[in-house]
Length: 142
Ligand SMILES: [Zn+2]
Image 1: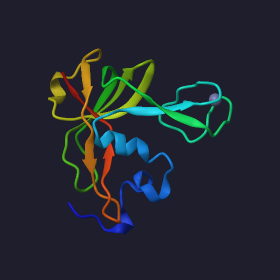
Image 2 (image 1 turned 60 degrees about the vertical axis):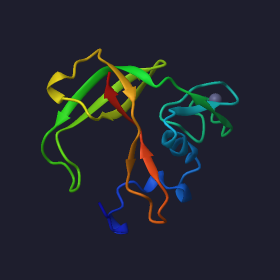
Image 3 (image 1 turned 45 degrees about the vertical axis):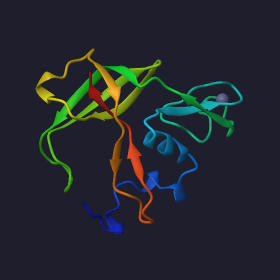
Image 4 (image 1 turned 180 degrees about the vertical axis):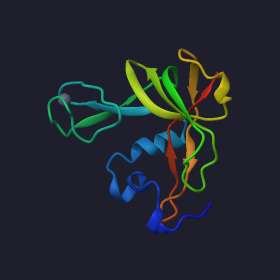
């Protein structure tokens, strides 16, 4: 799939625009991480360049487990953007006390249930305009 830059669907995931780009590099290695405030220890989701609790901009990366449970989900059959195949399953996955909004891939939407165990399966999306890889978190049923 080739996108023109004017409709680049993932501008914020490009290294040029995001000091949290390391998040995506680790995703490419199959690891899910987020930011942990170096001042107060607050763990944020999604990763943040400054702390929502104490406003510090010092952070370190915290490893997250690669498995969680489905807290909620919905299935989209129509109205998908060009290039996306349906149906798509959007879910909130609970892991390590966080609620991660994500998509479920390689699963049968009719069989998805709240409480199901899921495992991280990062999904490569369109490269940025410079040709660098970009990834998004996704999960699949166990
Ligand atoms: Zn903090």
